[in-house]
Length: 457
Ligand code: PLP
Image 1 (cartoon, protein in one colour):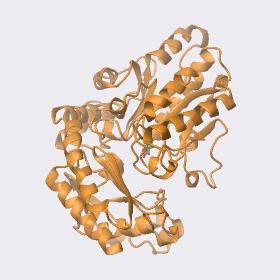
Image 2: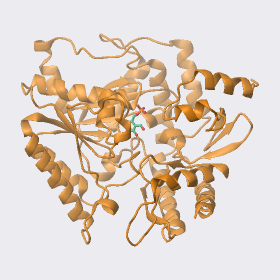
Image 3: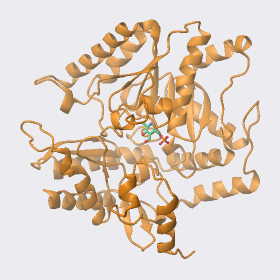
Image 4: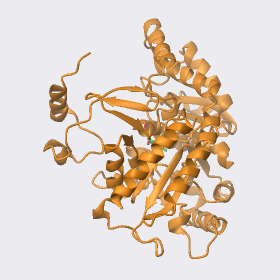
């Protein structure tokens, strides 16, 4: 298909409401022409002008198996020809859906029992909130409803998930957050630790703050804590030592459910199949999306642990049907895509690749960037990493936001053929390449990033 670039750009500008875009700058052309992405192969995408870009962010940390995987495209096409759709309400199913659910329950960490499907990470977290409320209503604990998330956590953009998200610019002018959601401190040792405080001491302090928050709200009013095993959009920040152990002890003490938001960390990104396994987390509920289908089809899942599900089943005589679901819950094409993607994840041992190539990647980032005068911290785990820029390393002072240092480095990288994301909070260049990335491709990524950083210094 030949694309008429001018026509497509004009139609787009006239009619698409783009997410996370300065609307006036886009409308007036200040942001330039829309990038028409035409195709992808491996870790690269190509625009309609034929320019190739290395996708150092796997779309939005999601195209884990890489672009152009014919196995997945064929699985989707086979299912579309055979049965494009049937719903999963009232005990209807498909072979792909049943196989996928059995697989997820068996591979997920902790004692998982059932899988509920949605279309996005946001709606899956919305479901988790409803499950927490449902569970506590059925246990005759009608006040145990508050959900605590973390500052700089990212859990989506719908009404409840957007409230869980702990960055104010996702709330401003949108009447969020809801009063049911509270936020506790971010576990970022570099910025948050007191002088001389070790990672373990800092983790213990964060856990003590959570404990105090639950005591203040009243344990009978707090239903769940939601967090990403590794903070993602809020800055790609692995937890400090001892964090998860300390946090889980607090949650257990107060009978507060733990929702692990594994939308980014699920299916290999940290070097383990799930981030929960990487950090010794035992969640009651798990959210997955992105890597579940490597974004070949919109599909998410709220995986429900035994503890919660048992109460739901026991309560069924009292409350009747579980009245929650979407037209597309358990969509058969999504299930077929997920099964094909999980086949690749397992056969090609992508968690193993993320571990091995990821260790090389982290070492390269440290070697090339950690000593630069404008770099405060280089951090990451597996195939997710970040470089944080600061105006003054000694005194840990940030750049004036108007200088847009992170955005300028990201733009300089893009001009040289690499997509690395300017993270929305602070001057941070983020990386999350597909999990099929090789060491040679890491060399390309790091080399372009180096040139980009040097041209902004
Ligand atoms: N949870 C996490 C950890 C995410 O990173 C994201 C998206 O980036 C979401 C939830 C929301 O997912 P979606 O954009 O599919 O709604």
